[in-house]
Image (tube, rainbow, N blue to C red):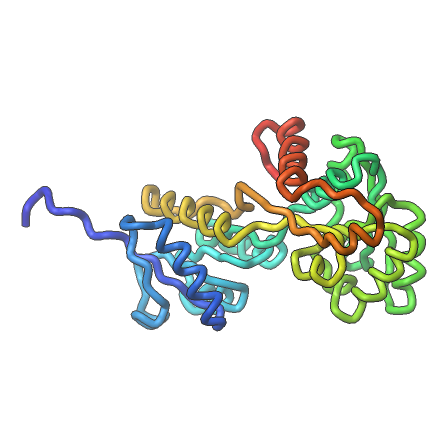
Length: 290
């Protein structure tokens, strides 16, 4: 064989979520960005049990869990998984797992609200006694941006609306974090109606809730997540190790313009909001960590 023969392309296997449309879309984005640098194959070719010496991209938490449990030691890169989901895996196997997080940093969500309401200085948060910890880092960081936050506890359904009313009296807006015990289909209508009757807005927790009536939420596009994933894979090809998990480099903003009109809130464009958030972050953190 000629010494100039090209080295074989690295292989990346994709463990799908079970949603064929989603899996096809993500795989296509990865393939476009990998171009000719790697071969992308679905997990069925070969079966998961036979994979060795390659990295695996797992789409969604169920696929990630299956790969992690079935193939100990195989590097696995998660997509469409949250930071909270991945945390125990990182703690147990920091050299094996990584991810491009799907959720949005709470600071970025808070600054999204600030970009829409520049006069806002106080943020109200709803949580249970078990979930209150998700806001600790945010509360510590907000004073650097001229803001503060307070958590209002609602451990039972009966406590939700009274807690929300106290929160609305305190905050310039409500920031919704990734807390399914508070922000779920059973609660969201009551939360939104109560907030808007008092002319207060809800920011977050994600795009789906903007469609339901939240005013705005930052989010990472599939394109941004795929580009970040390819950077991680290329790092793996060069070094044999995945970099640590992290967020995409860029975010977009989803708006509910009907809600804005109903509340008489003048809305900047999505691009202006996103740029304002980026400027606030970069001004206080030149490295740009969200």
